[in-house]
Length: 280
Image (cartoon, rainbow, N blue to C red; front, side):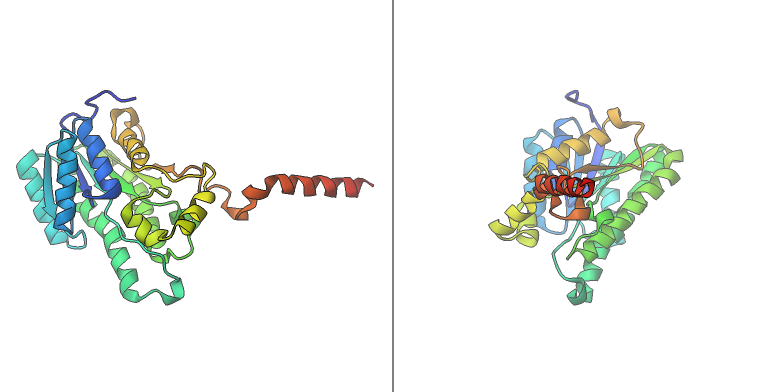
């Protein structure tokens, strides 16, 4: 679909870029010519990310960064500027999530997720966005989730944070368009990684139940989601801003009737029988 070097010489910064979806986005951007900077709170994640990006032929800078700490983000931004001289793309991917009933959610759990997902995305956007404003050019891509607008039982902390990021996406898209900065989001459905599995569907039975609610009856691969991210970051999407692209196999559609999709034929039978009864 894309020219081989569609992101040639673009400097792409990815928070949480050492594992899971962040690593996959870093790899596909590197494969298409970008120079990569990733950050994580864990050194072992940085090493895994570095290895994957270099294997994809990319140049990479790593930084030990907690996105809840603006001072550390500023330092890392300086390191990126010293190494690459510019920042073209920021992917706000760092996240924290787990399933927990709202009435029992510890306040520290609420604060941790809000701080990482919402506050972290804002801190990175403001600090690195300042460089883009000076350049009069740049892009921000935020990773959200469909439960930001549908809601999701057990995700009050993450859904609230992601909803805030979605609002931030649209607000910055309008506010920063004058600087030549595009701001978009993607909302992936379930994709199976070790981190997601352990927190969101720890048993095979739970995994099958989640997949069963998706019209396409399967999870996404991280590569499928990364390809969608690459499209929004590419010149093919130059006139798209303030948009949220959903990649979930149709999972968020039809939620109003729960499992009705599995019984559609029965609904039709009952409806037709009701019509016949009224006509008699």
